[in-house]
Image 1 (cartoon, rainbow, N blue to C red):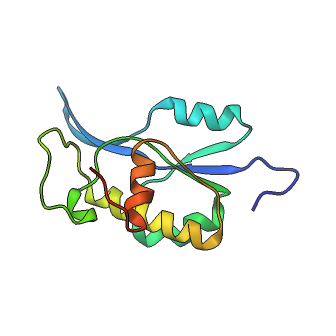
Image 2 (cartoon, one colour; image 1 turned 180 degrees about the vertical axis):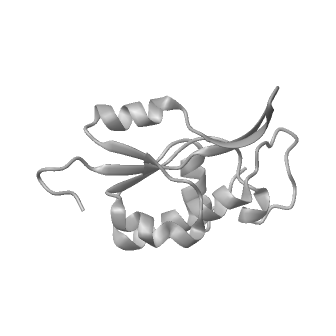
Length: 132
């Protein structure tokens, strides 16, 4: 998608959280600003990708690269482990499925992928790996 006159568009996966404030409870997508800042510093445009497996192909048609960000833990059942360590936190089935679909389709398209922390765990598990 990149041509010599445009900046590359990099999609970044966010975490999700629920915040309870005085005026209500809100489900939010969150992303450490350092991810977007790094993409901008490298000359790209960052786009936060809200998780929806049905949109993966359309999203990838518009992206020049994908960054699977850090965040909460993967569901151990995704890599065949029925035991959950007591410090496991923030499991999000929607994010897991979305990132796995992104990883597979980006790989099939030879689209650049960068994984950080949880992101590299997602890539590993998406392609049949396990975690300890």
